[in-house]
Amino acid sequence: MTELTHWIDGAHVKGTSGRFTDVFNPATGEVQARVPLATVEELNDAVARAAEAQKAWGATNPQRRARVMMKFGALINEHMDELAELVSREHGKTLPDGRGDVQRGLEVVEVCMGGPALLKGEFMDNGGPGIDLYAMRQPLGVVAGITPFNFPAMIPLWKMAPALTCGNAMILKPSERCPSTSLRLAELLKEAGLPDGVLQVVNGDKDVVDAILDNETVQGVGFVGSTPIAQYIYSRAAANGKRAQCFGGAKNHMIIMPDADLDKAADALVGAGFGAAGERCMAISVAVPVGKETADALVERLIPRIEKLKVGPYTAGDDVDYGPVITSAAKERINGLVNSGVEQGADLLVDGRDFSLQGYEEGFFVGPSFFDNVTPDMDIYKEEIFGPVLSQVRTESYEEALKLTMDNEYGNGTAIFTADGDTARDFAHRVNVGMVGINFPIPVPLSYFTFGGWKKSAFGDLNQYGPDAFRFYTKTKTVTARWFSGIKDGSQFNFKAMD
Ligand code: NAD
Image 1: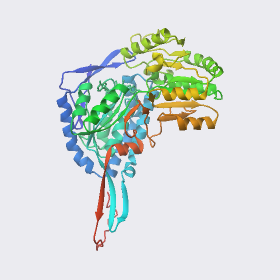
Image 2: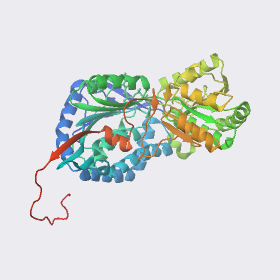
Image 3: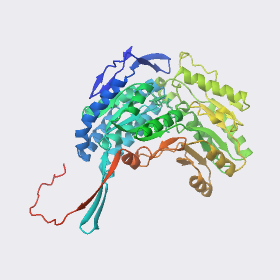
Image 4: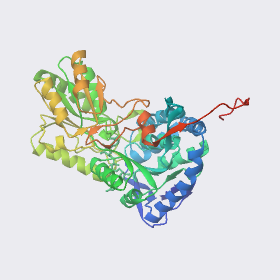
């Protein structure tokens, strides 16, 4: 049995708590490793060491910090297949999807390579007589990243790359279900030149999270996970005077207008609804066709596509569409919700409950389910299922479809499929959701924009990655400077003055 470690001061360190949790291979149901759950003392020690390391790192010029990101990016590329395999082995997603997980994180590292441009601050020449004003962006100090199981590479990279580029030290607390990718990324960061102690990976559960939230040295907390935990972490961090941005769950609606290309809409719904077994915060879980004809035509197209889905282990490579869900508890919960949908009167047109895969009977596989005639009072509509289940809610008009989307408590992503620019533009303008796709089902913005939902999908200010991340991970200091005379003699000839 592999015993995983923490990563402290640039080295693997065994846990001392004696408490562990199992890391499964979701495809086989076997325990493949156990991960130590840190104590409050271990966490506080890691933070104290990080604070010490941050002093020199924060004083290192931004370009040098960005160069670490350049080498880190090159190493991620070099180890792409290995990292993707690590993601898939613990998460269960297919290998191409595992590569996507690493790639979408790498893209944030790539933006950080040009990070100094986002750290320039502001300047006003002659704001008063002989007075110049300038605003500096300085690191917060020690910050923490607390991440979910469903993107074991991407989300830790979204947290660590901007935080470190801004000159902070980071305590990363990855999901205890998929911790190995974060540990490997820490090794690669060391190889890229990150000084020891600047990134500490502390494994654990609620005890460690609470210790992070109560540690006075930790200045900022970036969280991604489910909504109740996001709200809890945001409240406790804020009560303790920390800066916090906490991203939560989702229930993403896709509106299909009568003029949409329905084959393309059906393909999009199947990919976005069932990809990664529906375990994406940007998964489409609710199809909202407008008009009976659209709904019937969509059903006709969706059923054969869903029935054809290939479900299997990541070791089957490109040959599977999606893999198992993360735990047996997740599998039971999803099947329980499908049962509730039937009991509450939705029409189950494709039933994935009794799915079993020969040779992988103990794996956490769930077949695809598709419900028609779902109504907003049903649990399958209200809950974030986070599994391979698509619900269709029929509407009579564009306004009704828009209202349904807007009335939902979540506001992470949404999409509209239409051939009409006027409708698309109206939708993008009015909908109260953070990320909008037009004929594009999973509108995760590219890394030089920012990522974040509205309503119960995010708590706190500022989005993840892009320019917002540079604002979140720095604080502004504004200087008002007056010089009574300023001409100096002498010249400097060293072209490399900034190096
Ligand atoms: P989760 O909330 O169970 O766990 C997330 C993190 O919080 C983990 O590191 C976990 O150890 C920690 N945690 C769990 N329970 C805790 C508690 N009681 N107190 C303190 N910390 C606790 O989420 P998950 O199951 O790992 O991930 C799936 C969820 O994440 C889904 O709801 C999904 O929508 C959401 N998600 C959101 C985004 C986004 O950007 N909005 C992105 C990915 C995933």
